[in-house]
Length: 357
Image (cartoon, rainbow, N blue to C red; front, side):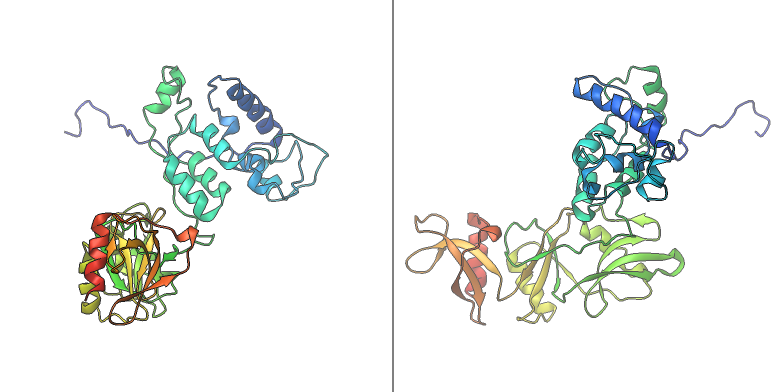
């Protein structure tokens, strides 16, 4: 078989490196490219404008920086301020917002657009995102003209440019809401043990990983194991990797399908009524999620009849209420527009069950 007349070739493209262009070349090609898009044309993305530092110079997120523009220096040296200015100016410097630049790059690269926006909202680091897109395998030359010879050549070997958070920057822990509505069932229920923080921990033979731990340094979420990022997968899937950490233990949790079952889970977990429970959807990824805290101070927004029963059918003005006391009584609470939620009939019935226990 070794002597059989066939050859083996790889269909996997090599990792593409982003360009390292001089400011002179980048700004010339970027200006032409941008002007054509403004006129309604569909120009191709060439190698000369695949420099993430060049696009970062055009991004208004860095407009407060005073960059030493120099036509002979590289865009990277200018961005990192490792050169001296030669008096060069350009109207495009700091003139484009992140979304506009992302739309321009999207014309010639294959990547998850929504994920890029979520990463931007989370870390506000355009340069990190530009590096991952332009340095990935997603180069397709021209999205709007796939019939071009160059487009066909690159499309054959292209694969999506993978995007992840930048470990060198702060990875914020999602905000914990006390408005218990809008839950995407089923949820992972565990004792609320905040505040939470992101830490690095050893993973045995897997190297290290990034985990979210509570004040007892017990794991409540997993972001990365070795070089495998889990942030774009659901919470239930991420927690399956918690046991790979050899440095921290995992906080006990229960999978619940309703507010009623979460109340039973609280009894199983010996939840403290002052701290309550942390409820998080099993299916939501780390970027786009809502964490809820179910305890005596949780807020609910609903209407109730003159007899005090919860309802969605009455014409009475809805108001805020919070759960207080072991008997589950309901007290009025001040109105807060930014916390406003709406309950459907099913939610109201679930709250009625809990309040009558």
